[in-house]
Image (cartoon, rainbow, N blue to C red; front, top):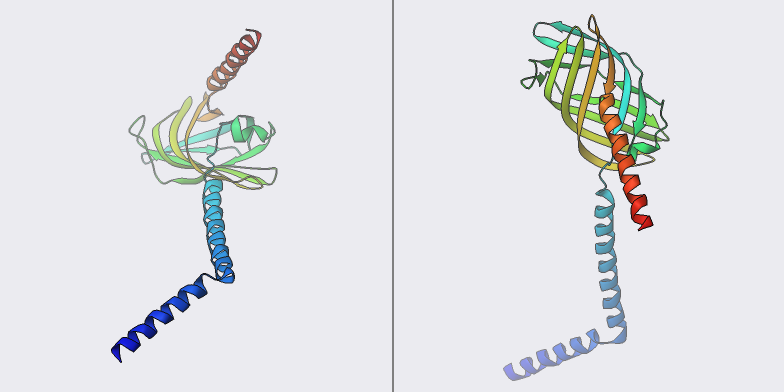
Amino acid sequence: MLSLCSHSHVLSGRNHQQQRNTPMNKYTQYLKHLCLAAVMLMTATTQHAQEIPITGEAFFTGSGFGMQSGGISTLTFNNPMTFTFGTGDYSVITPGTPATFAPISWTGSGPSAMLTAPVTPEWTIIFGGSTYQFDLLAVSSATMTSTGVSLSGTGVATVSGATTRDPTPYQFSLEGTGSGFNYTIAVPEPQTIALLVSGVAVVLLWARRCQRI
C-alpha cells in the first residue's frame, strides 16, 4: 500500500510536470515574465524621469527698504521685482517678467546672522504655464546699514507646471545700496552678471578657435 501510494504520487508529479510543459503553459509563463519585465522597465523609467535637477541661475533687480528693531533686521521688497536674465532652465523666461519676493528677517549680523524663520517661498515667477520658486532656508551672511544691505544664503529651488523639475539645492545672494534704509537691489549683484556674460563670451571665442583648427 505504501509503495502504491508512493507510485501514485510520482505519477501525479509527472503529470503535473507534463502540464507545466504544455505550449499553453509555456506561453502563459512567457507572458508573466514579459509583464514583469515591462513593470520593472516602467518603474526604472519613472524614477529616472523624476530625477531631473534644475540648472542655471535667475537674476532680478528692483528696490526695497529695511527696518531694524529689537535685534531683528527685516528687508522688505517693493513688489514686483523684475526678472532681468536667466541661464539654464531660467533662460526661457522673458526678461522683464515680474517676480514676487517675500520679506526676509534675521537676527545678528555678518556670518553670525540667522533667519528668524525659513521663507517659503522667498521668490516666485509664473511664466509659460510654469511656476518657478525658491525657498530660503538659511543665511550664511547678512548685513544691513542705512546705506546698504547684503545677504547670502541657501535653500531649495523648484519648477512645477508645464515644466517640472526636481527640488534642487540652490544658493541665493543679493546686494542693495541707497540711503535711509531705502535700497536699489540686485539679485545677485550686477558684477556677478557681468562676470557671467564675460565668461560666456570667452567660451564662445574658444569654441570658434577650435572650429578653425
